[in-house]
Length: 265
Image 1 (cartoon, helix red, strand yellow):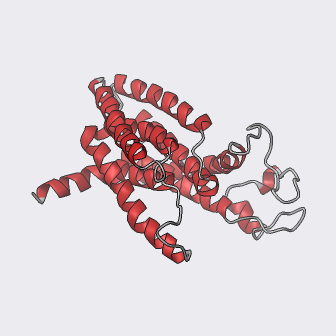
Image 2 (image 1 turned 135 degrees about the horizontal axis):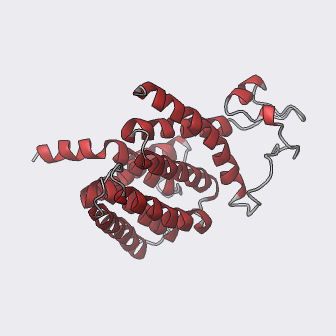
Image 3 (image 1 turned 180 degrees about the vertical axis):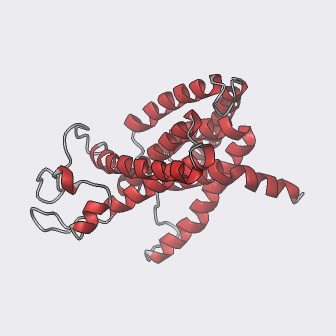
């Protein structure tokens, strides 16, 4: 038997590596640049050497500066890599070395990429959201049909995933219809993906939990950030990151939170 700490640690290292890809995706997709080719310094456009592209470690060894031009490299890059590593580790801790774990680690990675893009551009690109929906459902179907997956060969979980998508996506569509200035259609499309992954694990109850946490984080933490920036109630803060945070929290801890809430009544 492989010890759990090794599985989680291996997933964390793998997450760091994919975190490096996440920085490239988040930079190139909204700028409609090719996803192929080596990474370049955003300041001098010099191709980064492989030895200088090791996640986190290279940033520390170079003291956060480009080897060629000496300009400071944004700390967002190692932060994205570290976040990716943490998300992969959490997926391994929650689901183990299974197809379910791979599926939800990939899901978390997509949410990280979309969060970075939304924070910078206030945009959730269809080039990422739609492929995430299609590929996500393909992985969920495969996971549901395997005896080793979360659903243990029970395709009924797919029905719950569809219901979760309808509930989460439908609610955000209603919000966007009533108050279009506060909710974009990109959020609605993303909600279809979020509802699918939440519904697969816990049906409508977990999908609603994810929605509640998203609005809770968006309302409370969003207000704190707006005040910290010196803005008021009209300060625009993208909602995609809060959807991602609420959903990841629901995937990892939502069942426990839902049980605790139900025990109160």
